[in-house]
Amino acid sequence: MCGIIGYVGELQDAARVVLNGLKKLEYRGYDSWGIAVIPSGSTAVSIEKHIGHISGAETMLPKGSLAIGHTRWATHGGVTEANAHPHVSCGGDIIVVHNGIIENFQELRDELSQHTFLSQTDTEVIPHLMEEYGKIPLEQAVSKALQRVKGSYAILVFSTREPEKMIAVRKESPLVIGLSSNGFFAASDAVPFLEYTTKAVDLDDGEMAVITRHHVEYYDIPSMAKKEKQQKKITWTAEAASKGDNAHYMIKEILEQPSALRNAVVQDKQKLTAFAKEVMNAKNLKLVACGTSRHAAIIGRYLFTKLGKKPADVYIASEFSYFADSSDADTVILAVSQSGETADVLDGLRKAKGKGARILSIVNVMGSTIDRMSDITLYLNCGPEVGVASTKAFLNQLAVFYLVAYTMAGKTEEGAKQIKDAAHVVEESIKLNNEKMKMLAQTIKKFEHVYFLARGVNFPIAIEGALKLKEISYVHAEGMPAGELKHGTLALIEKGTPVILINPTDYTYSDSLSNGMETKARGAFLIGLSNQINPVYDFFIQLPTPSNELLYPLVATVPLQLLAYYTACEKGLNPDKPRNLAKSVTVK
Ligand code: M6R
Image (cartoon, rainbow, N blue to C red; front, side, top):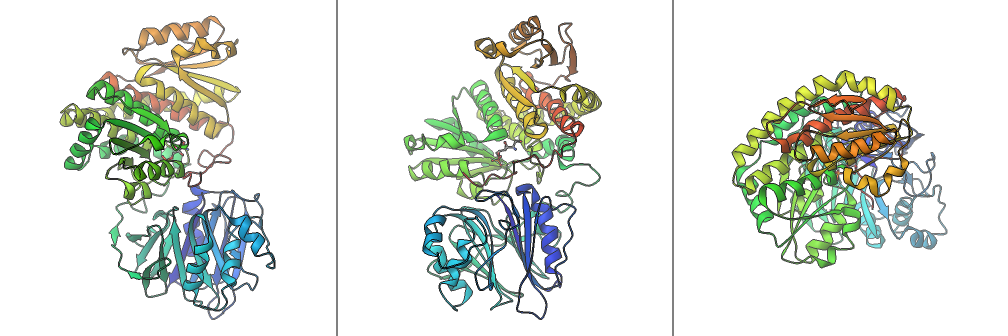
């Protein structure tokens, strides 16, 4: 769950190219960072490592045309300079950055006991292991070392003995090669090289790219058979991946939701129909996702049942692995993921695929591992999402679920129209609530616990609202089906406890209102989110009315995202970089 980037080419300041790239990858990890460069005309390496955020950082590293860098989210070993990457061999000539986990690192480390280890990381075994093979060509040393390594990795390596060559390899961790007229990049995703090029090649598991100033060659590991790879054009722009004049990515991404929603509707019709048909015909339909994407999947289940009369199960991906064995050729797995790289989702998919299941997915990142594993993928089309808290991806996941559900009911055009209408209503919801949520944040920041309640199709918005609030403002928040409250949680409600009731005037209205009243009777400070005011609310959040009551989740999500954002800001926290979290969770 780290970000890596390497560059080799004509640009003479590779270290700064890599530093700027790391700043764009920081959402993948921000405990510490480091860069290694071969200075021009030298065969020695210069390395810089730092603890903390990279955003405002400069580097003192000399100029050179090859550099690799890493931004870390600690797994093995604490947050120290020694544990920051790059890591080097005893001789100092082999330099490595790594994203992933080396599962057998302890065994290898014991075996390499005559080597001097400077960190507690799993990664450090790689340069030492390579050193064991003596002075053979770098690509051979990498290939041999990887035959000993168990686990997942995206690795960049160079050696001072071959100072114009960078090796990139991957297994179960993302790595994409960028091809520009000024040189080549290898990075965890395309965002850090978008300002140089939109031409890219996805590296697959078990592949190696050997990159020099003027060439990239691809090989299979361990056979080292040369292979041809397909080039792709990335549709994202550097501008879409920048935060512009906004204070944070998160607010930029919240505000661009209306236009993102309009893009969600632009789907390949044939694929959409085929996708809906597979969902409809599946004997066993299992929706698998984590975090916010799982909340979208729960709404998807409501929509499939309501519009397509199709039941489905929703699994937390990290738990799904324990059920994956029951999958078979009659099973359709529908994976939902913004990044398309979440390790827990991938693990379940691999197991289910191994049992013959069909894989459908709804993802944002084209060419991601989940996308490439899938029989059919529908894309979110919301552009790059950088803020750790998922916002626009969530709304677009909902939009894609609506489209699929309407297509299942034979009403694709109607579904598309509803989503376009919803984009206006979401715009209105932002206008109505932006200032109001700033105000409410001043109250919410003072509390340790907040409860979110809703029913039916709105229930996932309660858990999503709670997740947003806790992950970026560190206020403990719990979301639940309103009816479940009286089975335990009601005991925690006391005078002044904030309770947020998501209560549009749809089929859930009166039952949810009764549950809100039950909390109010115990002293709760009741915050109502509805299109209709009610005197029972101590604070009212106005929702505009969408064209169809099933669209309330889209409208109700927005004020809760804003509330979480402003609460974090009020507390002086950076909403884009919540402590201990990273955007793309590529470890189990
Ligand atoms: O990339 P994915 O959608 O698979 O990521 C899943 C979760 O890690 C993600 O939604 C996480 O819960 C967010 N930080 C929530 O805002």
